[in-house]
Each structure stands twice: as structure tokens, then as C-alpha cells.
Image (cartoon, rainbow, N blue to C red; front, side, top):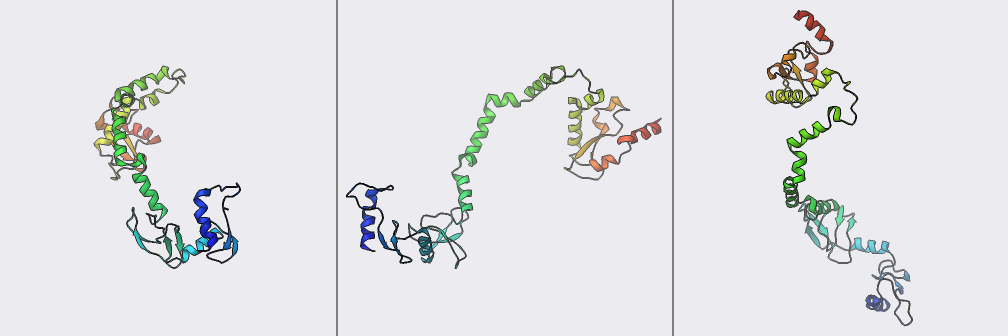
Length: 252
């Protein structure tokens, strides 16, 4: 190592990052030859003239071995030098890590930190958060069936802020009542959310009245008068849309 560079590295801790401009203090930089390119210029602390020379010298350093990634357990090459940073090796076709590197890629490092260092994603923290939320009084007050029914009563009918005198047709109001929603859910549950015509399960389903809603008001909420149909099968029924008129004529 050149004498001027040795003196520089010896005085470097005393100078600090910002250097010192007072008289009698060792200079922060010195003129010497670059370790890699041999150019005579003001050198950096590590003896190179630029970051480019430092990186080129790093890539020429042979690997020291292979390390095991903490996340995926795959082996990746590394160089045993604290000054050598991770860099891409064209000969190996992959990244070569430094002595302090623990992961084969940034993706593995991100997965590991999210799993082990991010408190909100750890299993024990998530379990405690769920227990704390379920046991809190505010959670129970907002999510119990009684609370939901009370909120519905306070925001429906004439108590709603946008109440306009009850101009919604009576049929529409009846189809949106609690009884109708409950009937629909019971029909779906009884049929296991499966279309009774084609056997499709889990798709967009309709709760169809076997005997029409408008002609048999006494059977509107009778579960035996309901069946689960998919959208396509529902459209093929005799009472869908305008076909209700022909059904009424045949009924008479």
C-alpha cells in the first residue's frame, strides 16, 4: 500500500466524515495511483479513484464459497470481505453476495422481514389482535344481531334522512323486507346453494317462487313454494317476466 494512502487511512478516524480544515490537521484526500486503473488522481478512502473502479475490482475478486439463504434455503455465492458489496457475476449468471449478506435475493429478504420483523404479519400478533377485537365491548355492540336490528329500525321508513313520503311501490317494499330476505336465505340453505334444474353450485343464484308472487300472496314466504335456480334456468321458467300473463290465462 502506498505510504500516503497508509497515512491517510491512519488519520481518517480522527478526521471524521466532514473532514477538518484547521491548520496542522492531516489532509482528507491524497494524490496517488488508483489500485485498479493506476490513474494518478485524488483517491478515495479505500484507495480507488471512483466507484466504477471499486465495482470492477470487486467483480474480479474470486468467490469464497456458498452461503444458505435464510428464507428459501438455497445456496448463493459470496465473497469473504467486508468491503465487497453484492454484485452480479456474468460468469456465474447470478448475484454474488458479501460476507454480511444473508439472503440470495431482495425478494427473499422482503418475505423474511415481513414474516419475522413486521409485527402486524406475525401469527402470534395477529391472533392476539383478533382476540382483543372480539373481546372489546365496542366490537360486540356494533356487530351483535340486536345492534344491527336497532340500526335498521333507526334508518328505515320515516326515520331515514331521505324519506320522501313513502312513494316506493308496495311490491318493492315487500320484496325488500326482513321476511323476504330470510325466506331467500332459507331456500338457498335447504338446496345447498345448488340450482335445482342444471345442478350448478356456487354461481349467481335466484330464489324462484314455484307459484308466482303476485298470484299467490299467501305462499310468498312459504319455503316449500321456493326453489333455487341459476340465472339462465330462472329465465326459462313459465313465470319469468312477461310470461306471467300466459300463466295467469292458463290458470283460469
